[in-house]
Amino acid sequence: MKCEMIRDLLPLYIDGLTSEESNKEIEKHLKSCKECQLYYKEMTGEIQSPARISDEELKDVELIKKVKRKNRRKFIVSLTGGILAAVILLALIFSRTNSSAKFEDVQMDYGVRGDKAYLTLESQPGYELWISGGVSGNDSNLKILSVREIGGTRKDRMSWEDEIGTEDDPCRWTIEFRDKIIVIENGILVEEENIE
Ligand SMILES: [Zn+2]
Image (cartoon, rainbow, N blue to C red; front, top):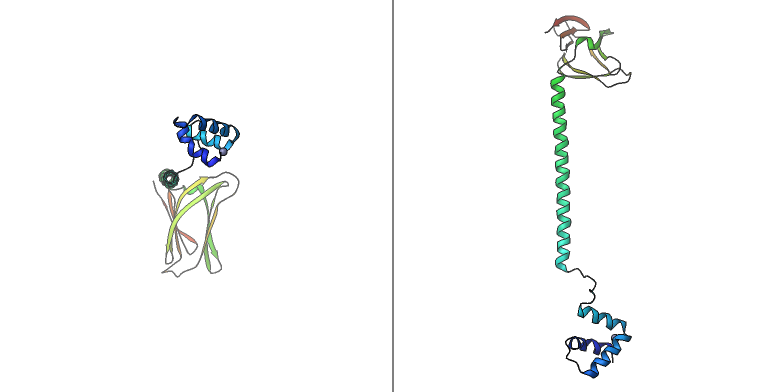
């Protein structure tokens, strides 16, 4: 018998509806034909047919992937938010505990070079200067926020240089420390005020 015929008969054979003679033929064929044997076993549930993924399941897989991607994006967003919050918190702590540095923490040098006034601020070796401030016209207001230890022997050095102004409109630098305010006009110290 041909495989096709056998396979047509298999459902009937399994239900016991085929004749004795047919049964013999079918059994003989099954013994010699591996493919039909496999087919038969699959029909009786003796072996599982290789899992074929349905469209429905494929959609599910896609959905899972999407959800995973979404979760990853959520994770990155929350991670970035966390880092930002930590930085802001650190900045707050830093600005509160180190509102400004002391006069003695910073070496100051100033004077006149040619037609220009200069100012140099230098830290102790292994320290870093944090300065804020702005310039308006000839007026510069520098606030020494902090002197922070960073290790090593390097000095942190900052320099300013500006053209000497007139008596009415001098080149003026105001340097604010925690305990002192210094005013330099045209490279000359004109005011020194202790605070605290
Ligand atoms: Zn066969």
